[in-house]
Amino acid sequence: MNVIYIDVLFVVNFFITFFLLLITAKLSKRDDKMKRTVLASFIGGAYALVILCEDLNYAVSFFGKLAAACIIVLAAYKFRDFKTYVKEVCIFFFVNLLFVGIMVGLWLLFKPKGVIINNSTVYFNVSARVLLFSAFTAYVLSALIIRIYNSKASAKELYSVTVFKSNSKIRFFAFADSGNNLKEPFSDYPVIIAQKELFGGIDCRRAIPFSSIGGEGVLFAFKPDRVEISSSAGSTVVENVYVALSDRMKKGEYQGILNPKILNI
Image (cartoon, rainbow, N blue to C red):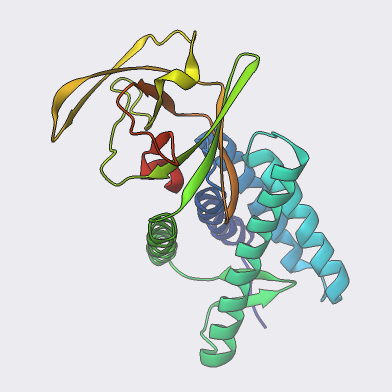
């Protein structure tokens, strides 16, 4: 007979949900807020009590997990629009299924003691130290893989960038340059460099110091309401970013330069 401790069950799945939400934020390029992530993780921990139910049929288990994913994502991330919300739910649900699939595979292969899987929910009867170390290691590896993938995928690709400010929006093409490591000095937000003539009349109040092969100087920037970045891999919306204007951009197929860190948020 397997013994399941409710407190261990909740804590284990709280941390699993927490790290899965961080991975989801990386994949969907969302700015994860700690308070919302913790709240959503509490919901994930509470949903784990479904493991105590009698074996549910596949349909009930699947749709129950999907409904929980919808609620957790809504709690974790600010709602923008329905399309973005569905995308985030799909990513979170996929990450969950991937995690459960890996755990089921390991369980069938090694039959480790202290691991129980029921109704697509995982229970680990292990020490807190082992649990935290394993979860943190899994998160670091996942984040590293995502960062490497994003950097390679964006190396030669042009991005469609739409900047929203007040009641106007400006669209242009930009590429991700590893040499652009500019950040706004007070907020530490990444900076997009754009052609100055695209943004006539916009008040730029932030000074961004820079240094390059050609020398040093200052670019003036503004904080947009949001920036939408699109590529062949999909689109994402970024809020914590500044746009610096330059009149030294070369005329060509692009009118902006992205800080690659924007693509790994």
